[in-house]
Image (tube, rainbow, N blue to C red; front, side, top):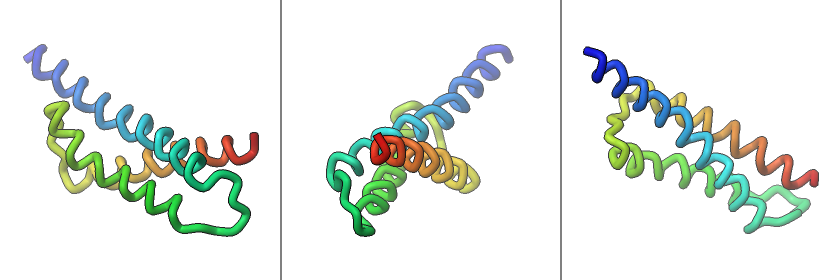
Length: 92
């Protein structure tokens, strides 16, 4: 019983920290690709969507099975960290 609780806790941590980390990476990539471009360009959001899609392949590597409800959380965490990191880099 204790090992299954620990395993579930590990899976929940992976479901939380991996999207946050990859969102920051997506923000850095968006800044590196687009720089300080003043006009709106959809490539930044395309990078974000691609990084969210990567979760489909990375989560099974960590023995985490994703349910439909998990995609909303993953997308929100990834978007939030992407937006924060890209905004901070643009205003530096």
